[in-house]
Every structure is written in C-alpha cells, then in structure tokens.
Amino acid sequence: MAFMELVFGFALIVSIAGMFFDYRKQQLKIMSKMNQMEEGDLQKELAAIRQRLAVLEKIVTDKNYTLQDEINNLRDK
Image (cartoon, rainbow, N blue to C red; front, side, top):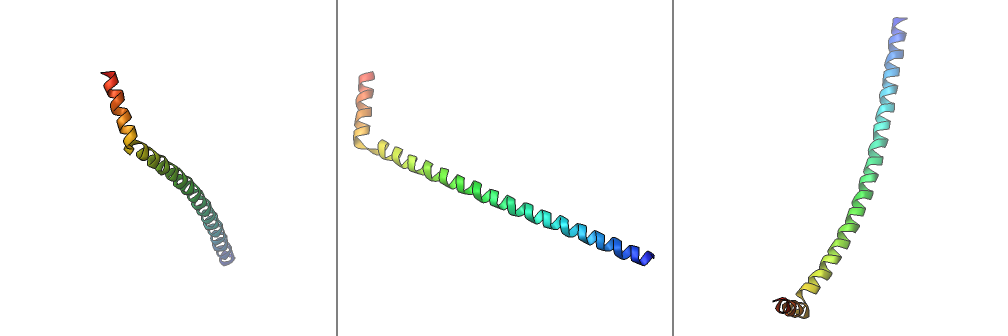
C-alpha cells in the first residue's frame, strides 16, 4: 500500500510541475510578444525623431536662415 501511495504522490508532483512549467512558458511567450510590440513602437518613435531632426538640421544649415538670424541680431542691438 505504501508503494502505491509513493507512486501516486510522485505522479501528482510530476503533473503539478508540468503544469507550472507550461504556465511559465506561456507567460514568457506573452512577455516576449509585449516586448516586441514595445520595441516596434520605440522604433517608430525613433524614426519620427530622426525625421524631425533632419528637417531641423536642414533649416539651421540653410544660408537664408543664418542671414536672417544675423539681421535679427543686428536689429536687436
């Protein structure tokens, strides 16, 4: 009788451990998908920032912008 209880207990422990590891595996998949989604959002935001920076660099390096800035500085004096 003790042998049967030992076998039953072992089978119960193995089953519970299997369920736990399946649960953890599903959690990791979900977390991975969430991280990928967040990474995609960050990549989109970074691309938008780079585009805005390129526009600002173009404006600031434009000769007319520099000339207008110098004219404004002379008026302020």
